[in-house]
Length: 407
Image (cartoon, rainbow, N blue to C red; front, side, top):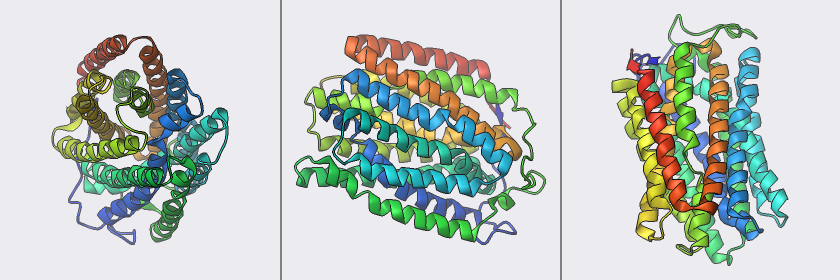
């Protein structure tokens, strides 16, 4: 796979939009930070919440795996639709609204199946918005540098992902472990996210103007729909599918923490918050490296994924904590540098479609990973570790065969 290098100086404003590319990235990062406050706060207790309603480890693995699959596979529809209609802001706003509405409801009394459906519905909101949102962001990062732009956005994401779980942990601690109040407080940052998003859309209605002259498509509906995606994109997708198939969800990891009595329920979101801090640092580090050496940076992802279960599924608290932090670091690479590479491999006219297809591949692999980890955990932890390491070895082989280069 081949990716283009970073563009010109990031601090030079591009003619047209009402704010500089970096300001746009930071403003969009603020939206994502507030939204992450909401849904990462909820995700930090998904495993214990479902367990409190009677879920087994397999059910937790299936629900969290299918939820992540919904967040990714459904982009196969939302991505091409966004490219056809060029209504990127509309898709972005609709997806954030769905997430903001579903999360507080998750804390209300209900059945296991109702809670499971809400977990999946929240992830559908991410599927609706993500291809369009990433396309909007990719235009500005054409100027800031792909790796750095997506990394800064991801790091701001993780500020919210860190604060949200801590807020949930605090409310759980003072409310005697009641999920209703803990998830109800997440409504406020959700409303704030929608307000900032509306302001940003009014300020920069056409972020495509950031794209360097000669690469930006026209904004007409359907432009670029017939173009084929490059071969390098599919090689990259195959590697990504392999490495995510061997990557456990935090739902299974948190299930292990609670069932083995390694940490109290209120401590789970605290550990998740720490993992999100590792996520932010890894995003910044690999984003910086990507702009200098290219996609070769991604070789670190299967290595991290192979080590996580070796540490995280032990009965030693210190090792579990280290494993959770490495899980967070791997998530940082997935959420930033993987996205940056897609933007460099695919021209603007097909970028939302590419993000949708790429996310579909990720979604299938994530669903398999969640089910595989949940089933293997119930059967044998040594088997879980062995299979994960073997899958990541295959992923490294695919990565080497793809022969990534930096253009």
